[in-house]
Each structure stands twice: as C-alpha cells, then as structure tokens.
Image (cartoon, rainbow, N blue to C red; front, side):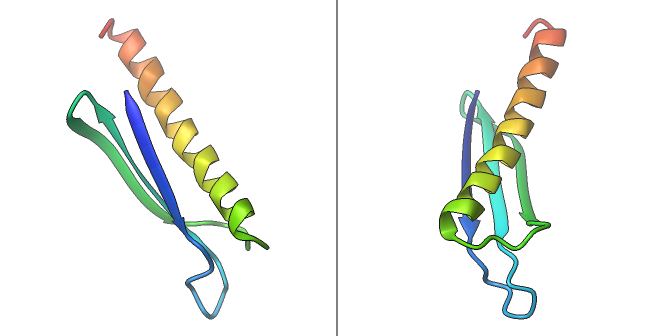
Length: 72
C-alpha cells in the first residue's frame, strides 16, 4: 500500500484556500484518488502540506483497515 499527496498552495485567488490531492496504490493498481479544496486558509506552504499529509494518511489508514478486515 503506497500513497502520494501534493498541495497547490493558495491557488484560489478569491478565498486563498489551497487544494490537496493524492492517490493510493495497492501494488501497481490505483485504488483511491482525491482532490479537495482545504477547508481552512493555510498561512504557509508548510501548513498546507501538513494538512494535505493528514488527509492522505487518513485515507491510507482507512484502506489499510479495510484490507485487514477482508484478510487481504
């Protein structure tokens, strides 16, 4: 199980919110992807990346638990 995430810092010129995105692979198969505007305004690129990593890890842990439940 492998995940990648990235953030586009404050691209929205009106609200100054960043956009987080990520994809998750099981082996070489894509099992999940996401792109979402962050709900808060990050004051730095570091803060925006930190929020994106949190979203990515939350999804990865959910997938991991689902795989464990199905004994995969």
